[in-house]
Image (cartoon, rainbow, N blue to C red; front, side, top):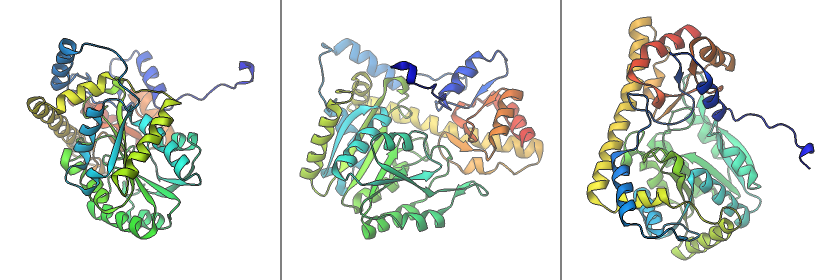
Length: 393
């Protein structure tokens, strides 16, 4: 049986982590895999998470099954975090999933059952998992223009022109904030325009918001999503606690369905639970229990928000610091676009061969498509990374 299998290609991002670990150079810098690191180069456990974890250890009395939907208090907390103050808050349902990728798959499977001939439109470029997960669910995938490689910003006119062709059998997948991989976000006026297109053409918006709080802050990052949820009848949302709670390895996410009514949203949830039963059955509990504990305690919530705000501010400063180093030391504004991007990532506009040169000559690791993880920088790395980027360019 296994003799018929061919060798699989290496994951373009996770394989970088292996190569980085095996690199013996002292000046190596990992800007590949998307994790946040502090000024010491560590991915810390947030203080709020640590406190919640200690509380769980002291109070949790069982490791019995939680259920197909996971922790319902966690699910409600995610709905509150994203949809409070919108009409969608009372006509939605949520299911805990193994990370946002698990949520993507569950909602992809739901679309396949509810509307089998659907086409999912994804941005070009998009998160590396979007296409394979939607295709694995048996859905057609089509791309819409998103990024202008010359300006390194969103090509808004082309984006709207192409999305306007989507119709009732289509799903348009959007990044809620901090676009992965480009870091270039659509503005609020564009959210309004896409919402109007959804109302007019009948396509279903699908928003993947994995970085809430890392762009302009918790509330601002959800502004476009909330406007859309308030003004469309149906919508799909995936969310993750990997970044904003630092729960990378706990695989904590949620799938949210907004329906025309609470009954329709409930029916969709029931179908997701049936689909989950035949895949992973139940999501892991620990991460969701931590998030629930934090968001149900005012003091822990405030501590978490303060920590998240500090992380977001540091990302802004890292972007500014890298651009200022390039401007002042090399008299170049070529990479000023990095400062205007949001969240963890930016695309440098480098070819694959340039990214190989960046890695092999300088030990600066980024993804082959030109993506670098700004959140992987430390302040002490900025002069060296700036030098490497300028010399490779």
